[in-house]
Amino acid sequence: MPMNPEPHAVALGEYHAAAQAQPNIALVKYWGKRDAELNLPVVGSISITLDSLWTRTEVRFVPGAVQDRVSLNGRSDESVTKRVVACLDLLRQRAHIDWGAVVDSRNNFPTAAGLASSASGFAALVYAGGRALGLELSEAELSILARRCSGSAARSVLGGYVEWTRGQLADGSDSAAHPMLAADAWPLRVAVAITSTAAKQVGSSEGMRRTAQTSPFQAAWIATQETDLAAARSAILTCDFDALALVSEHSCLKMHALAMAAQPGLLYWNGATVECMHRVRTLRQQGLPVFFTVDAGPQLKAVCAPSAIEKVKAALREVPGVLDVLDSGLGAGAHAIALGALEA
Ligand code: 2P0
Image 1: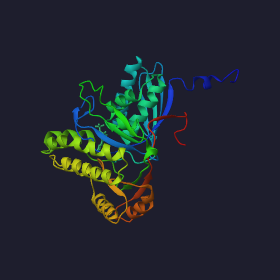
Image 2: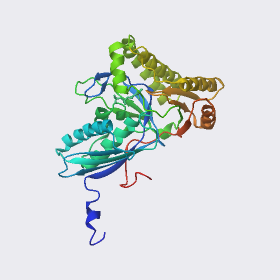
Image 3: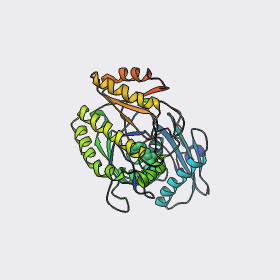
Image 4: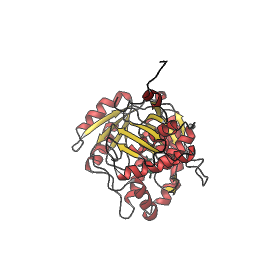
């Protein structure tokens, strides 16, 4: 320890922390809320957390400051700031302080295009913000706080295979994510076919609200979810790829059918998304262990055995309309990183 540390070095680290979280991809989908204020889902869901796509976030609370300053990928945006301030308010309530914060967040992948940037973003924000304030939050508490900021963020707090339980309680204290299986216990790979980098026209919250109000399939969606969750749990715990492929594609197509039947119908796919679905099914018929899933955006995620990843990526690259193919393994949950490591 230096005898006379510089004042700056002493201050650095006070109310200041950085964290990283990765997006997760639901294999059994979340769609619909039983409480929009608390982000309580109508159904449970199961996901995998990725490793090579990330959000890195630094949070510094400034004693006496009255405003928050938020930047995402070096820019400030009103709608992003509004959601970040609401999330910081939850942390401030918990710590009994009212100071403003400076938040700097970066994604190494396109924001708001169905790549779960809100999941990794809010998981990283609650992790870094909680640490900056010295709150000692358990995994379940972090998951619940992240859930209140964006539903799917509840799952990005944890790594590997994750289940977010629906819960029954009105206050949401039993609706958190739990670990199912570690990433390295079944190290599947994911190829992400980027078919558009434009932000989606209808966000997930609005899409879910419209679906619940107008889709004739809402009751069937809720009634059949438990069967899918049970099938996915069993497939994951026995590392049964074929069983996981069947239930995952079923859940994906069922969620989109539900949303397409809303009024006006929600159509998150483009032509290349559909061509990629056919391509993945052809590969599987040819014996390659691969299946697809698609979220509230046009990107297609192909989940496969490690031995299949190069063939899957090459096949998706050939599909007209595919702009790029990203590649990821499965990774850890939200974790602390060094201050100043945002660009590393
Ligand atoms: C999921 N999605 O399970 C589902 C499948 C998209 C399709 O969770 O309103 O950003 O913040 O709770 O979590 C995306 O919705 O929505 C999502 P909010 P969120 O991954």
